[in-house]
Amino acid sequence: MTWTAPDIARTPQVLIGDERALLHSLLTRGREILLWKCQGLNGELLAIRSVEPSSMSLLGLIRHMTEVERGWFRRRAAGEPLDYVYCSETNRDGDFHDTVPDQAEADYARFVEEIALADKAIADLPLDHTALHPGTGTELSLRWIYLHMIEEYGRHAGHADLLRERIDGSVGYQ
Image (tube, rainbow, N blue to C red):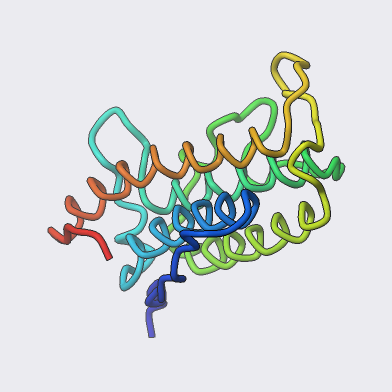
């Protein structure tokens, strides 16, 4: 039996609440949209790339966002000393370039696990908690990291829309 990405039930959005609840709700929405665009697809379909010369695929996006969740929330905000999952200092695009359709189920599970670990890592940090930007050494807040992650998911949701339409013609929003 071939594994396929499971159906995703969307979490109701928080429309009224404190800043943290609203930020987390928007972040959750972005995460769920990416998973929704993958539902029902097997590893072969998830690994289909957009157009040459791009190496972008839905599986690549899942792997990329695993790295991004881990990097921003766990490594930077929480200060956990972690290595990359798919990338390295010498292979910065391993998340997109090194996809293997037969490993899609494990990559998908790793992404879902990384979300839970990221949420746990920052659960007790205030929005004003600061960390250093990896490229510039500039101080930034957890609030900024939330907003950056919402932006990142928004950008990649558009990519996921186009990739899914290319794969099976599926369009629309849940």
